[in-house]
Amino acid sequence: LEVFNAATTLRRYNTFAFKYAQLRSLPMTAASDAHHAAAVGTAYTILNCEELSVKSALAQILKGNELNQRYLTPRDSMRKTWNNWLRLRRKKLPDIAGQDGR
Image (cartoon, rainbow, N blue to C red; front, side):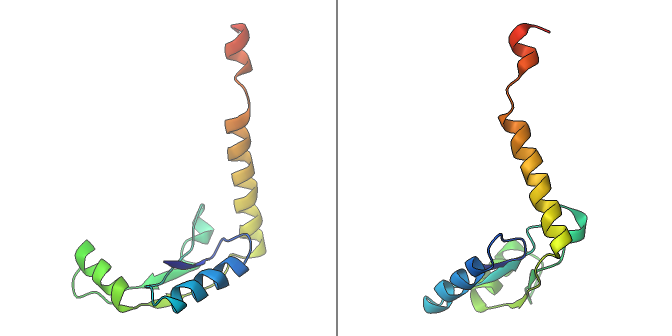
């Protein structure tokens, strides 16, 4: 279960996820949720795998991991929000050019 997302809108969601996983003894991961280069590596999970394979990575997630957690800076958070807003706005705009044939 992802218990830490560096780009979460409300930080309490991370706390809720962590407590949920902890109460149920679920494996935990952390992720940066990077949408631009500056956000890469802000949060991550270290897996001490025997070999570089999906099978080994999944086995290590079940055993337990080292979670490195750091939130996005306010600037990077604003950048992500702005880019998301622009992306969603583009999806919602009607294709006016296609409707009147221009």
